[in-house]
Amino acid sequence: MKELLLTAPGKLAWQHAEEPVLTKIGALVRPLAVSTCDFDHLLYSGHSGLPLPLAIGHECVAEVLAIGSDVTSISVGDRVSVPLQVNCGICRQCRAGRSSSCEAVPWLSCFGLGLASGNWGGAMSDIVAVPYADAMLTNLPAELSTASATCLSCNMPDAYRCVAPQLARNPGAPVLIVAGAFDNIALYSAGIATALGASQVDVYGIHPSARDKVEAMGARVLLGQNEIAGNHYPIAVDASMDPEKLALAIHACEPAAELTLSTMYKAKSTPLPLMQMFEKCLSIATGQPDVRSSIKSVVQLLIAEQDKFALLIDEVQPWETASLAFATGQGKRVVMRD
Ligand SMILES: [Zn+2]
Ligand SMILES: [Zn+2]
Image (cartoon, rainbow, N blue to C red; front, top):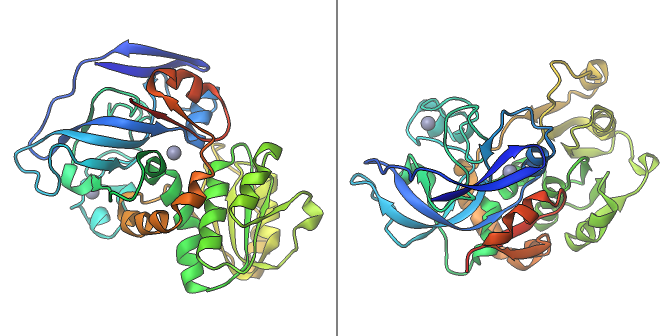
């Protein structure tokens, strides 16, 4: 089979790989559509810190080719969402809804992120082995288009955890989203926040080319730091990877606010204004999203808002042009088989 490998920063190549083996509790799936994510842009540019080469792609809708003898929840031919993370579904962390922290596999066991935690392969492949089929795969309802549904593997649940539980606890609250190197998580967070009734959704730091997408999500673009009100937002999202913008988000939070950091800070130590955070009784959450654990709620939201979130897709391209899609560096592209 063929898979798309990121061999070095800025270099992608189709290469032959051995076909994966089916296990009793696993499934083999054929990716139908794969979309680009902010993390792919980070990988491609060489700034992820993960070892190369790696098989790229982790936002994926696939067709089930084969299932193991113990698999009960899916059938051959099903169209499924494949989550970013590998998770078993039965360990203590999985049962508690923390599928990103599954104890059965090493941390960062994900498709498309390379060999750091095992050779799970990437979605830009002819066949992907899903090791825990019942725990991981989700049958997709017919009303969701294949191109729209790729974001269910990563971006949509990642953005969902940044604003949805917070808005459930604080209905109608205004939300601040701080963007940075890449725009997708900020845009999905904005779209989810407006869909879930935030009274005001402000986005700072978005690239000029994505400003119309902010407005399409029903949110407002803040152009300057001076437009960010201090002590104003009960809910804030930092998707910037920029310590100075993180400090801005903290400044903008009102007392007892909830701030979610969707991105990694790779430095061993990142300065934080702890006294200011203490004064504000600020709650900060960070880490990977629990993709599989939140999938039911996220699917329902995507069905309800499918047309709106489709506006975040720049282009749907043929499978063979994936190298171009992953090399673009910004935005969201979906590559699809015929
Ligand atoms: Zn992603
Ligand atoms: Zn587990």
